[in-house]
Image (cartoon, rainbow, N blue to C red; front, side, top):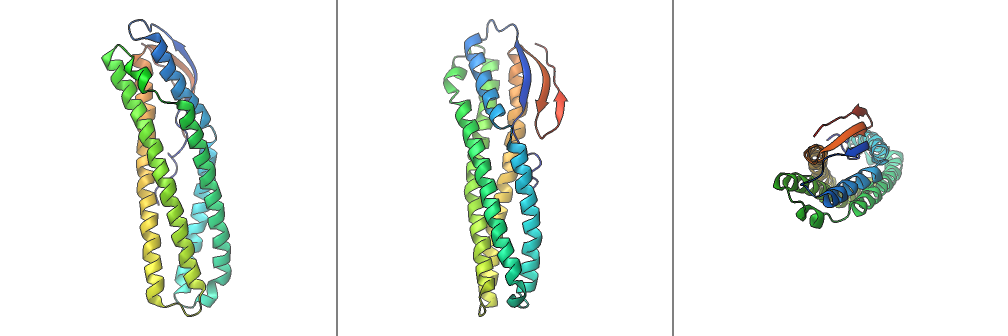
Length: 234
C-alpha cells in the first residue's frame, strides 16, 4: 500500500520578508506569494485528515484479508466481519469527503495565478512561478482523479462483501469481484504516488521561486507535521 505519509498539506511559511523586488514586479510577485500561502494555510488540517484515513485503511485492510480468507472457505464465518467492514467503508468515505472539501477550499483560495505570472518581467522568475503553480494545479487534478477512483474502490469492495454474504455465491463470482476490487485499489495507489510527487515538487519549486524573487524567509515551515527552520537569502 502506497504511503499517505507525504500526502499532507503543502508547506506553509511562518513569516516572509519581501526584499529587493525591484526589477521583477512587486505586485504580481506579492499576488503569487499570497495565493500560494493562502492555499497552504487552508491545508492546515490535511495532515490530521490523512492520518485518520490511513488508520482506517490499515484497519480495513486487515479485515479485508480475514474476510477473503475465511469467506472463500465458508461465507457463513464472515457475516459479522462483513457488517463491521461495511461500517468501516462508510467511515473511509466520510474521511475522504472531508479531505476533498479541504483541498477544494485550498484550491479556491489560491485562485487563478496565470495572469499574475504572465506579468512577471524576469523570465527566470516567471519560469519558476509557472513550474510551482503547474505542480499545484496538477496535484489538485491528481487528487480529483484519486477521489473518483477512491469511490470506485469503496464501491467494488462493498460489492465483494455483498457477494460473500450470499449463501449460494459461486467461486467464479467472488473471483471476479476480487479482481474488480483489486483493479480499483491499484488505481488509487498509483494516484497516491503521483500526488506525493506533485506535493514535493510544489514545495521545492515554491521555495526556489521565493528565493529567486528576493524573499528572505524565516520561521517554521510545516510539511508533514514536523517543523523545520528555513532561511533563504536573495
